[in-house]
Image (cartoon, rainbow, N blue to C red; front, side, top):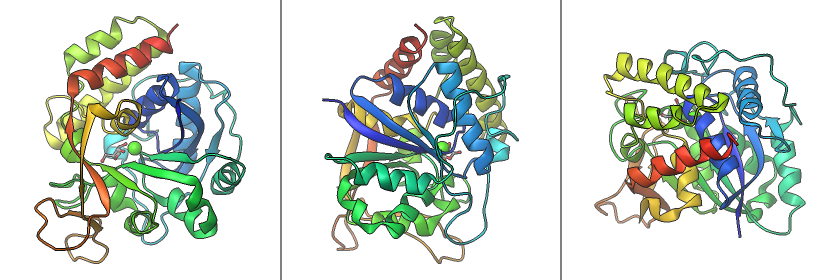
Length: 311
Ligand code: BDR
Ligand code: CA
């Protein structure tokens, strides 16, 4: 049976491919797309979710707009990585797919309360919406089977030497989710930096030849430019779809059970994910952390998803 999921995201080039994978993969049932401020402001990430649903022909999946600011601290966006629109590269017409609710957190609360079975939350932006939901309606934690989030790293960060963007953008939210009692899986840069959408991958997607495939290639092309200019990467890493892949085909992403803590106060380390891979702290394991990726199978999944939504 397909796993019912809510995809909480901040599109975002790689979020866009996460939406495509979640909508196309038969092992996953996409109940709703909630948007959060992250890569860009909330109005832009919400518009981008609508644009992707338009071009991918994703109909009947509610798009709901969540939180516009982090729980605490100053808002950051990633215009340097994703452009002023948050989805720079392709041209898009005016969005057609509607916004079902501008009270995204309330919408998710009611969706969860109204269900007989648990739901998995896949979060590919800052964890603000998920934390706000748990603060506003603690009872819905029992309805969430698991939170799989793209964020953090067992190694270096990408916004600061220690912190990855999604966690750095709202560390308190990540901390609340981690301590909620809901099983948490972290998919961090240590794994996502292995998924480089090189020319061979781009050629496979281009060969599909559909309007969606063309948009994906243009997105990857823009993303390649910023990843090259900022971090010197030879090709852009497609972080967010890996969180969906882990759920859809669990053996594509290997995890280890370990201790994970979020640094909230460090002078140089706020937003760091502190992962006790060598079990040095004696603190009990509290999370599953991704440590391996079958890149070939991952790209097969992504290419197949684009092809599926192109027919
Ligand atoms: C994460 O930050 C965003 O720029 C991407 O969409 C991804 O979710 C990578 O650090
Ligand atoms: Ca994202």
